[in-house]
Length: 248
Image (cartoon, one colour):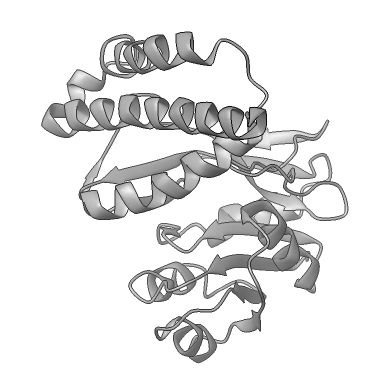
């Protein structure tokens, strides 16, 4: 039987880490890579049997790959600290590990916003490769929105990843200011940025609220579409600032 390592990266994840690790307590190994938590994250992770490495912060993708490198087993299940698996899925995942044809699996992700599952706006099923052989693939090292690189032998599992993305608006703005800065740096050589600043926020709202049926998610759907429009504007403004600085 193939063994499984679960990898998680953390910083000040005290409210989330127990739920995350407890949901995969049946795994053969739990690996947590922490980048300077000042709360009880490390203590709680160790109490749940995780191997904890404390390091600097090189970026999301590089940190996730560090966790993969630290894992003892070839099969990896990579979770964020604010994610968790539902009960009763061990058998499904164990069967997938022992399959002979595949070396990676996509899982659908159920993302919650202000306490409610957002079923539209492109947030579901939001399939991502999270179960994979580290000998075959790993996270592509981009500044933001990192994903596991696809393989030629990838299949789909029905096991959902639950994701408590934002419990309040303060958390949304804090996280997305960091994300938008990283994305702007990644796209700093873009062209027609002024046009994008005017058009992209409007297009994002139309896409998420109308075309992707965000209106079916109630007032949270409207609020989220507005916030995603704000995010697009923030990215383009930061790209403009970077380009002006480079010209000066």
